[in-house]
Length: 360
Image (tube, rainbow, N blue to C red; front, side, top):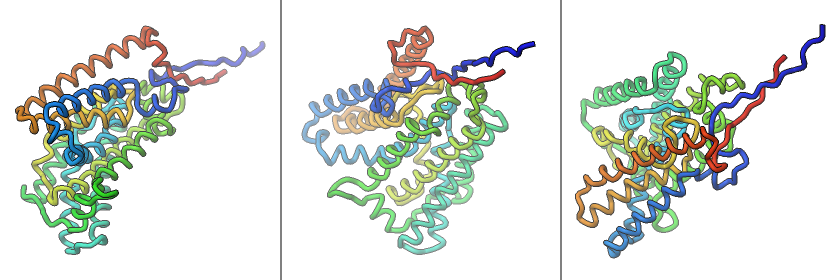
């Protein structure tokens, strides 16, 4: 009896950008350019309404500085949401990491870079720990990410309050505030903006061009299909959540540098603001697709709205209304895009990522 010829099975693991798409489409994404046009319109409106105050480099510099910490958090959140997950704990992890770091630096008593470097390392290690906990519970215990990160959201914030008695710590080495928090390069460009830009560029390249980014998108598209083609899904999820925690810890030291205090009560809406920015920037809540640059553009919409409303005398509460409306529109647009892709009517923007598995 003759054995049948080898059989080739095609496994589709989800809908993502075209593999052969130009570099700018991979980096910026399909929706980010449209969101960027909306951002330009918002900037133009405020520039016309308040040319002497809004349309000034000093004001744009302030907006960028205020968005820098959120941009660092947004890089990690983008990776998590691309896996079809969520992380509600990043704001509290930021606070916890900042608290532990501040306590360590206060106990050391120094004001130089030696103490500061120890504080930076401690903050990142704290973030890595909580990110790893999130990843293990999601990947191994199979607890939904919403529940896991909601739990660690409360736990990290509670531990931070227990350690400090609910009182902020202001013993931050002067070198952090003068060099990172309020330092400038190239004349008037804040150091914290440059640091955030470096993180954003690295994150964008990782998501668009590396195997790590490909596996992240594959997991978000279809965990089962990803497993069939050899992706170690559990390990990838743990890596993604751990990386997000590390960035939250790093954001904690940036927050200490900028505000010279732990600001325990000042991060209650951080996680929601970052999630909104990621979704507005074009990352799909259903997983499988997203760009870091889109997230950054999404961050600047609420930042510019808040700044513009204050300058023009409009109640800043309208910012939440405007951001909420843009968020709903962004999610609806994502649903339409996914429906069009499923019908094969996406105009060539989306394709199936196909892997071939050969068997007998």
